[in-house]
Length: 261
Image (cartoon, rainbow, N blue to C red):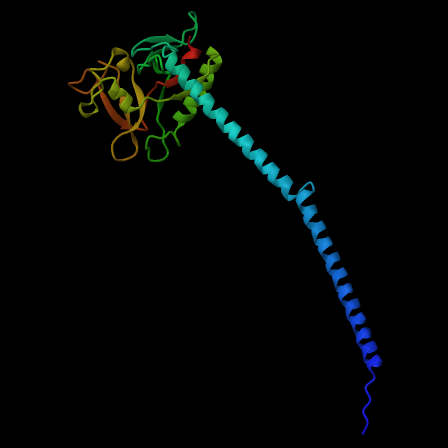
């Protein structure tokens, strides 16, 4: 049996297959390059366009720098104020307890007594009306616990503040009733129900405090006018009364010294 080997035919077959494989590889390479170019284009677009990564990063940095600058300015302003206060401690007028202050005019006075010493470093002063502006029941519809909610007194004080600002042209920071703790600072003795050691202006009229008294929730501390229908043995009386009773409405206001001077 004769087997003949045709080398030319084999060589041609190998050449044909190599060319075919090379063609497939070239096509795959071209497709790969095209895909990479597309991906690169997308990445570049996401990075460099208006809403891209670089733009957003730059915006974040700019916002951060602006916030830092704002905080630095705030801190510097606060330091400037502290330095100014330290260098000029005598900025404000001193007010002493019992001093009479007129917020109105000579012909139409609105007189108040200073109830707390206010030194040169304090910008506000606490004042008590010279007398009660009206007689009123506390009229609390809920158990009272040092809050004006549910009381006609809250409305009365708000109206008084508005009227006082209108008549004097001055800004009033706050209008409320006196607290028992403030009265104690003026010499009152709640345990013995007396204000005899207080300055005379304290008991020159009868008025409600804002501090609740007793355990019922329906009683409020009250100052009685000296030497007038007081319980036996008393010349000056401080006690708590049912909210349904009537007494004077004598406001305490807080006002900036710049509004007075």
